[in-house]
Length: 268
Ligand code: BGC
Image 1 (cartoon, rainbow, N blue to C red):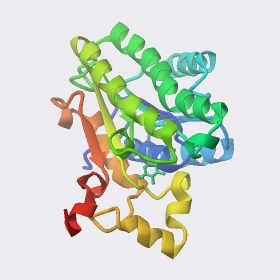
Image 2: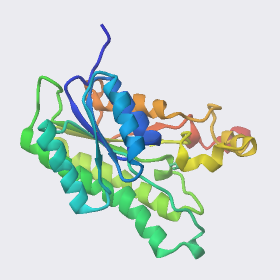
Image 3: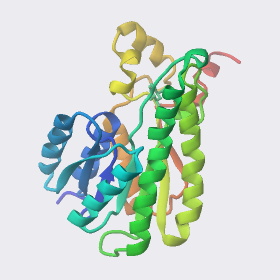
Image 4: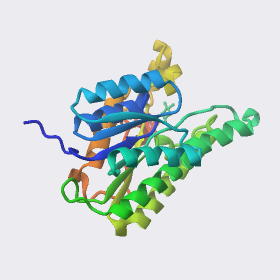
């Protein structure tokens, strides 16, 4: 029999209709979790992911909500809790880039990135934590009363010229996650981050779609290949399962070594 470590657990993945979120949703479902596929646009893509997840013999449903809007986040959690009763796993994945040099970056570009990438995490984590604290541990499914996974980035550590809004949001995720981990530990809620490097998704298409761009990108990745959504999905399953029960307040870099200062392999 296959090992399905998340059997019976209820998960919500934000921004799960494409890219890393889709990869995480697929991996959680394959591990036995029922999964809410949150999306904000492209309902057809969300419906396609739901159909695929159901093939893993789990329940799945698509719920639309802009994670940066309090009323929409509340409504999404109300729907999930009334349909499935509770939440065991939250993956705060929704995120976006609006890149520009500082001197031409608009306030709208700044605000949108901070609102989705950071405020969205706060709003979703708050709703999930309220339910996890209310409910407590369900010993039949997990040692923890809940697991919250924040999708960060190598740019919680690596500064990124031309992307100050995005880098600031991910730097914020780092201390948001650590502070939340400190605060929620007494409730037995585990909080961790995954910090992906260059994963082949629509968000960074320009960095991999031409051979020249890919060669230059690979110069930043010691392991010599671009990442795939399933690389992140596998890390998320581990962080959501009791196999990582003593891992708390940690950022797991899934980056092929991008954070190893690859230039120093050639001198210094
Ligand atoms: C960004 C990608 C980028 C990667 C590595 C991610 O957080 O969203 O656009 O390719 O970091 O720089």
